[in-house]
Length: 231
Image (cartoon, rainbow, N blue to C red; front, side, top):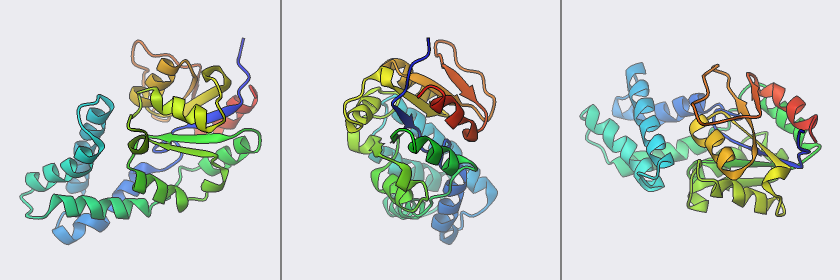
């Protein structure tokens, strides 16, 4: 028997925010003055950044080590003599200015927010995520924003989701549904917390063994139909 949902927990990057485009714009604004503005430079940074975020999910690095370490690695790879801490700060500032949304995300969240509160639960750096949210047209429809740097834990740690439940008035896991794109962080966190999961699987990937989802969608615009038919 399906549950009756009272709220939605929603991932940010690559679920409602177009992170790849935001990352590209912020990266080029930061590194072009250093001569790192070719497609291979962007690709190298993306690979390094992905590795650091996976390490964060596994508890192997801190948020600050991620913020600076990815640029230390990039500058070292291309032999660029620059202060990685300053480059990291500049990048974070530039990224905080990017509120680009995935097509269909604004309307999907707007529809759901008319019926129930929506909490965004994101692994990210506080000033970056709050800056992007403030500049996004989606902000007025978000009831709570939970950021890993502020919580001191990152998805897949279910603590992130528990904090969101408290911010929504003390709801229980069975009262909400989670939506996100990442099996390693979003799906795993929802499974650990006992929360129903809607996997936004635009790339049509295979779900890793040991994880489960209640729903799967290819377009974020399909989310209201799933959430609201169980409201």
